[in-house]
Length: 129
Image (cartoon, rainbow, N blue to C red; front, side, top):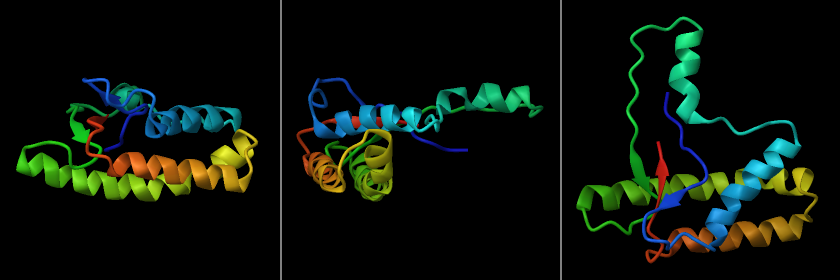
């Protein structure tokens, strides 16, 4: 199994007060209000063991949110992660509309601002996997 954890993180503070971090918090809040809490991948190993799986191995990784890393492989990984998250951003629009009571236009604008954050290489964020 593989899944990303929210909220996203950064070590240098560049993620603080950004729309992409707010998107994480609002997604979690709206999902909870709809009765569909977001899965916590940090619990997957325990859950799998509780239902009978044995020899469960867990590897935790940090995947960059965009192409900010200097390392060539991490930069490429960041490109793919960014593209994946770009698709996810709009996919949870209903969470904002139905869970938080936003208008469709408000949700669209919020998603566009979050997309802009993902394009900003000055934001050194990552998703815990």
